[in-house]
Structures are given as structure tokens and as C-alpha cells.
Image (cartoon, rainbow, N blue to C red):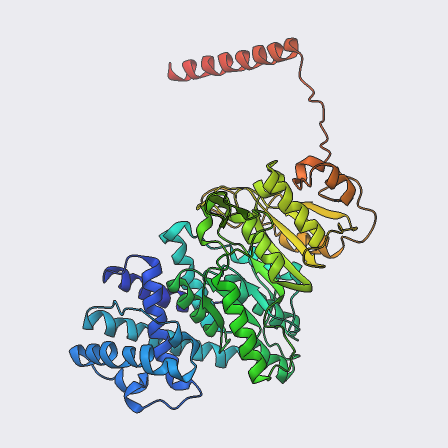
Length: 530
């Protein structure tokens, strides 16, 4: 948890950048990322020349400082440092330093120095070994990016990510992936969950969820894996790739595996083949992790509706098959395709057998009656065991969107299987996430998330066949007969209690009594006035 003083310092930095002309939150945090990387550069396990050390050049002022940072330090990170296998430096291709005045640069560097002094005091005071205050600061900064509305992007609430991580229960036994990672909130959530899982000391946050403070039960090999080869992300926006990398690095993940890539495109297969060849050459994988597949997927892809099929990988041909054009004899699919269906098909492909996914989907994917939607749900329940559907309240993503969403949890069985699942599907009606469901999203007293997690963990206890309750199970055969529809309301039994209405005569009698009391009160007032 950040202290009030640290929050105030971060806010002052933000306000100064805003006043200096960096009013777009995405742009501002990108520039802050560059400064943070410069600040931490001399602490990396690489030899850095004296002229590139923050502790040296930050003593300068005016044009001398400005020109040195912009023309030397920034260019060193972009060009030279990338050759030394520093992931953030590699991601800085085509980046631009937009802090354009000496005074704005000096003030910003001063704020960062003061923030780090406060961090050091807090770490010394609280002995928070694995709880990375730097990471909390970056998360605090990232909240502002939601205000930009860039390309319709909005962040998944942190408490929803925490809940999903607990439901998925990832560990250090496999790769964890977000195929449209944005700022890497889900990957950070998975990392923090694993730290909590292996912590001797934990605290409860404002949502009633546990947060680990030490991770002391982690073996050295596990710690190395967490820092270098567990977390993988992809995003089509180069700016978000840089922000994503810095977010992970600020949380202690020294070598984030984040790629600038559209996972729905054919470039994804090329990327995975190259990674597989690289892995086979190095042969340094102590955890024996597959380069092509992932053990865990946590995600909320940007379900933006219809996209141009020309950019979509030909390997994604199960929901939208490729057909031969009679004139050109070339394979093609229909001109536009639904992104949410393709993302789900891609996730099924990306998971290794036995791998699990916990993802947010628009509710239309669960009940839309089109043939492609039905086919997608059929594929999901043949290749995988769909374990659960958690219906989220419609206001979870306010004030950015009111779209109704659900969380689906599934485990990969076999790719392109034609054998349907045998287990029933567990449904849960989540009525509140602990915040008001209007545009203000104020914290409420109740903390329903621990109850949701406990219900998920106890889903095998009892028969859970009473569909009038908040959670229940539905046999696969029934779902199959309903064209694979997965909308909770399709199967829930609602109880309607008859309303008892007062008789009109009783209401009129009460009105006369009230009128008599009012008239008596008026008489008393008139006498007092007289």
C-alpha cells in the first residue's frame, strides 16, 4: 500500500507534466517510463559509463542537463543498450523524447528523486522484501491512462484481476500469457498472486483479498523463473508494449517477455517458430517450458467487433473457414469477422494440453444464436472442459463502457478434438464487485470477492443443482441441446413472490387521517400567529 505522502508526490509529478503540455495520460506515462528507466539504469547488472548514470548527470541544470539527457542518455538507451539484451531498450524503437523544456525535465527528475527517497524509507521501515512499492507507484500512475480512451482501451479493474488470478491459480510450473496485454495488469496480477501464494506473511487489502509481503517460500530457481521466463505478453500498440514492460520491471520482473505483435495475425505463428528454434539452440530451460504453448492464460482482449479478415492468420480457420474463390482459385474467408470469436479460437490454440485459462468475454459470445457463435462455443466445449461461467455485474467497466461481460474458465484437453466434455458447467451470478455500479464506482462496505472465490473453490462440494441459488451446475448435455448457449439466465430459476397490495379503502382511510393531522397543525400555527 502506498503512503499518502508517496501518492501526493506522484500526483505532483503528474500535475507538473500536465502543466508542461503532456495532457494525454498515455503520452505522459510513456515519458515517465523513460525517466524511470534512466533512474534505474545504473542498478542493472551491466556496465554503464559514468556519463549515463543518473546520479552523475542529475546534478546538472538548464540546457546542459536537457541536451545531455535527450541527445546522449536517451539515444544510448534506444540504440546501444538494446544490443545488450535489455528488453525495455529493445522496445524503444521509434520512441520520441517529448519533455521539451529544461525546466520541465529538471522538475520531473526532482519529483522522481523525492519519490525514490520515500520508497527507500518505506522499504527500510517495513522490511517489505517482495512487496515492490515501485510497482504500486506504477500501478497508481496507470490509473490515469484509462482517462485517455486511446483506441477505446480501458483497463480491467485491479480487484477483478486479483479475483481472476485466484480463480486460475497459476504457479511457477509453466508460462503465463496475456495475448492482448495492454499495460500487463493481468501479468502483474498473476505475479503478485504467486508471491502471495508463497508468502509467510500476508495482509488483507481493501477488497478483503490477501496480498503477500515476502514470498519467502519460493526456491531460488522459482525466483529466477519468475523474473525471466514465466510471463509473456503481446500487444499491437508499441507504446503499450513499452508501458507494459516498465510495469513488469517496476514489479521486479527483470526480463519481461513482451512482444509487439497482433496475435490474430500470421506473424504470431512466425514469432512462435522463431522462439522455438531459439529455445532449442540454447537448451537452458530448467523448467522444460514449451516455447509454443502456455500453461496459463489470463486476459481481457479488446473485443472490438468486426475486423478485416485480410489481416487474420490463415491458421485461424475453424470458426471462419477459408473457401476457394471460384474466379481467382485463391482461399479466402468472408470480408469481416468477429474479433471475440477469433481471440477465443487463438487462446484454445495457445494453451498446452492441461493448460488453463480465465478470461473476460462479452456476454453476447455466450448466447448469440448465429452459426459462427454456436460453432465457437462447440469448439470450446470439445477441445476444452469449460469449467465455469461467472456473470459479472453490468457496471464493472464503468465509466468507460456499460457492456455486460462474463468470466469463463476452461482447461485444454486436446486441440481439434471431436469428443465433447463430460463435466457439467458451474454458473455463478456475481451481483456486486464491492463498488457502486454507476459512473462514480465508489467503494462499498461489503467485500463480495472473497465469497466468489470461496464459492469457486467449493464448486465440487454438494450437488449444487438448485438453480434458484446464486451458483449452480448445468449438465453438458442440456447445454448441447440448447445450441451451446452459456447465458446464466437461460438456466437460472427465478422465484417470483406475489406482491401484497393494500386495499383502496385502507389507503383512503390513512389519507383522511393524515389530512386531519395537517389541518390540526395549521390551526395551531394560526393561533400562535394571532
